[in-house]
Length: 235
Image (cartoon, rainbow, N blue to C red; front, side):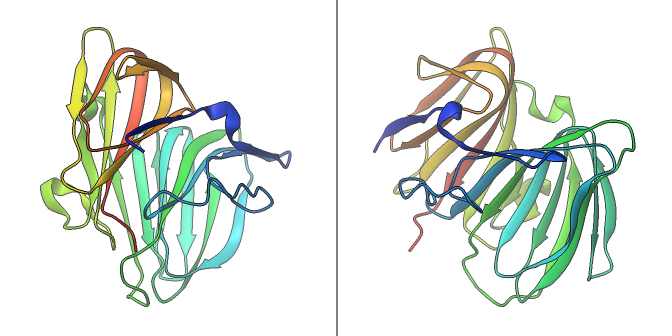
């Protein structure tokens, strides 16, 4: 595999009324043996939660979990004593480690919240749980890749318990982004909004590309927002 498109329409779908979700990888009742994980990347769920609704308190362990808010307000509470309200452009991150329980709710009584919930498998289990948030501006992402999660916490990013660099970018008009994974690392691009071309292939929100070795060019965007994952081999 050097370049593979994963169409958004191939994802699993769940409609619980208050929650409408698309699953890129096998999750809950959706099982696709061809889509279990990509290196350490295990879950990409596109979630829409109705006003005043949410996920009640539930537990996690040994998972690196972040929510990338696209529209609305996401409210978080956990057994570590953390509480936050994250709006569009915001990231909330939880390293579940040895175990933590949390809830996630729509922070608005009137408007839905729309976000991606993403899980990675950690490179070390049983660590002390952590929680952080980060707000990204459009200027941070405009026509470039903004690092917001990384294995070493460099450049103001949140530190992950995994050898992964995760970037966000906005691409419109003449803007173009070039990227090449180093060595044996592999990449994944998730289209969050709009339409964009990756190596001349047209993609829209919900689509993804998995790639390795070769350069990728991300351009010709129309209201495009992407998340790019630079992942170490997972064993």
